[in-house]
Length: 264
Image (spheres, rainbow, N blue to C red):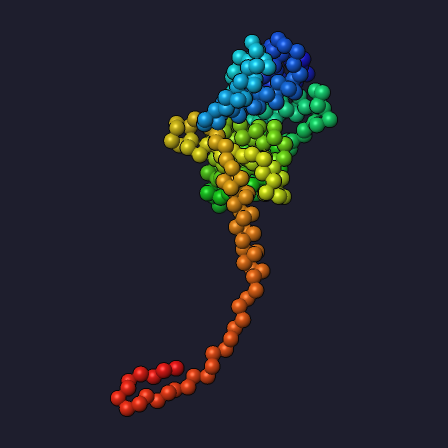
């Protein structure tokens, strides 16, 4: 059980609900299942299998996941000074829980927000950047792309990570921050290693700004499409060039009387 005083004050709403679970559950397990719960809630078609699994495991405590989601929204609201800001509540909480729990050997340490802002500003040219595809191949909770989106909105964000929890956190962060793009779980050095992926907010302008995500296949992922196009280009370059056979010297055949054609 986490002590509220052990966590940063800005996470107090979330930690309070975390401590209200009545069963004997580890904080890390609750957080992992909360990420699954929230991802399922944001899926356009939902995920009954995840809901049934969590109901069966947590029983009367299942309703507290809804309270955790409300606490997440409240935490984000408290820490967003204005519409130009971003706040990675999930990543901040994950760093704390993973470093204190039974899974401390898996501790995560994400790039500090101030460094993310600095890197994002270094990547943005002086002219306005829109309708570009921007990729982070080791995204963690997605905070570097969140920082970029605040500086240069209107671009398509593509995040990749090997860690499934990080992948889902990035998807949730993108959805709640109103970003558009994809989040992919797999090895960014090998696009064929695709575990799962999400399309983020593809219809956000048509549904009144409601955050949502869709599951996608490997063939729908931007990383795979770029890799496939490049593979085809390389294969085409490697094909043997056809031999150039010189044309025979042209010889005019004089037509017989009355003919008007010349054959070359």
